[in-house]
Length: 76
Image (cartoon, rainbow, N blue to C red):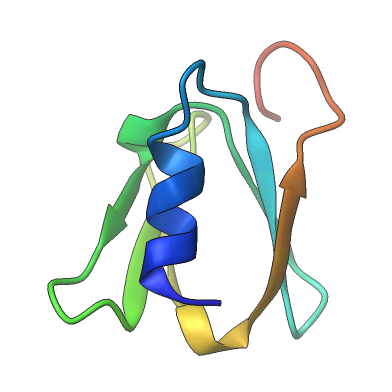
């Protein structure tokens, strides 16, 4: 995945929550565009969680896809 593809999902209007699927099987749910920060060079991103204010640092080259979030309401 490229940073531009992620930016496109983040800037979609209306915004729709989505899930990031990683090569190692992890999934990261993005419920608001403010919960993602992309590094200046576009290789890495920080995905913040609602539950504990922690962030996962991800290498965008290891993202297999992004897709619509199937869950509704607050992230768990």
